[in-house]
Image (tube, rainbow, N blue to C red; front, side):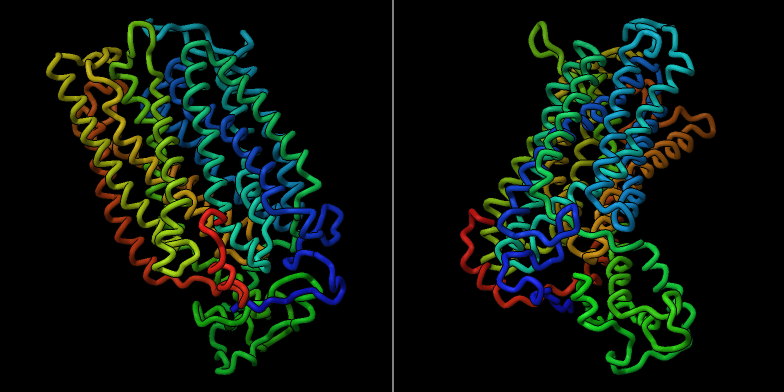
Amino acid sequence: MATIEKNRDAHRGEDYTQDGSVDLKGKPVLRSETGTWKACYFIIGYEILERMAFHGIQSNLVSYLTRKLLEGTVTSANNVTNWSGTVWITPILGAYIADAYLGRYWTFVSASATYLLGMCLLTLSVSVPALKPPPCSSKEEGCAKASNFQVGVFYCALYIIALAAGGTKPIISTIGADQFDNFEPKEKNQKLSFFNWWMIGIVIGILISYTFLVYIQDNVGFSLGYGIPTVALAIAVLVFLIGTPLYRHKVASGSPLTKIAQVLVAAAKKARVPIPNDPKELYELSSEEYSNNRKLRIDRTPSLRFLDKAAVKSGPNKPWNLCPVTQVEETKQMIKMIPVLLATFIPSAYVAQVNTLFVKQGSTMNRSIGPHFDVPPASLGVFITISMLIGLLVYDRWFVPTIRRYTKNPRGITLMQRMGAGFLMHILVMVAACLAERKRLSVARANGIFGKNQIVPITIFFLLPQFILMGIAEAFIEVALLEFFYDQAPEAMKSIGASYYTSSKGVGYFLSTFLLTTVSNITKKHGHRGWILDNLNISHIDYFYAFLVVLSILNFIFFILVSKLFIYNAEFENPKMDLALETLPDNEE
């Protein structure tokens, strides 16, 4: 169990935070003048604009690749998922740099500058005649393709953005959560709602991108459609910088990956050394050392007992041979989350279908509303954001206060239960997508429609169930994953914990690429037509969706086993906490 080490002696009687927060100069900060929601308004404001910019690119990228760069169904879908995977996997590197060297603030600021550079280059690549591909109507055949140079500049811009995302996506949410002091009951309660409102901010940004930006890209052009997100990102960075005086910061505490490696090596070296029955015989630093360094001391836990060997007093007293109990426990906390992380990969692969196959499905259907307006296929994503937004509001304002009366859990239900509900919804999403595609194909066959560019006379809104169900599922999953990996990570490794969340998405996108390519290749063997072709009217994406249903069921069983075995970190001992929960009004969650 974590032991609270409050640094009271130096600032007794002052209103300083008790969690080791400092300003940019490394000085302790006053609780009344920094942090909490007054700081988070700027951080969430940044996130709304940044998500509008990012999803303004991602949501309709497959359309640009197929219509402008003339890529096929599998190639364009894989290029989208490979880029998205890179966006969400690079945060591992960014989190390492933030926790080990630069600190979260300066890592974020430097990455944001690179991010803005990538967005500017991307806008130029679709605007400047020498950089953008030759004009081509969607109804034309044999259009001239973009040159290797033009394609190279476009993808160079995309991957500059992906690299920069490594220093922004795992950091900004962590900076937001850092604005609440875990040792102050009122602020700790506010943090319980922070991640829900954080996700609501994300949803608002995505909503703008799926409606306004996608429409601009499809009906006006990609120059303006990418230029607006670039300006939005510039404003987002400015908003974040304006809030700088209000932010609380955590001091970089050395490489977390090195600390984990030291524990693993030390434990392996002493594999045959017995662990003493009395935990007090294990090596640990004094409480004063932790207090002076504004760090938490963590008591030994029985999980992953083999790692305790790293703290057995045997051999030379060197970091790679002997580690304090707290360092061992921090390593345990990071390792025990890995099975949960593994269970999130397949669900993340489903989300990848929203911006690839779901959009391709919609592009083959009747999109007309009245005589003069066609719905952009990517705009159906707006129903994901709307259903997610409603789901988050209902969850935070009604479900949690209601269910908490029965469970006595401040969150209403556990984070793993919330994840499980979302994973179960994902099964329904893939079932709905499979049934919708079977219906689309049956209408196509009934009307003799087999051409690549022919439109099937069935409304695009027939796809609504899979989009709405996906939004409800994400309302459960997204917040739970982000909060889980942040909450269960040790204090010195919060950015690495947040990178677990982003790497879940990253691996999921790469897994989608692998599954799509593998299924496409295997089903073409022995002279068969294949399930996934450039011409969706003669493809069988419904079979691919059915395959994902089977995978999702198997993954859900695996998740249940993992959740049964997982042991949450012990909460800080704070007798004021229970009283605060009893007296907190429902609308102040």
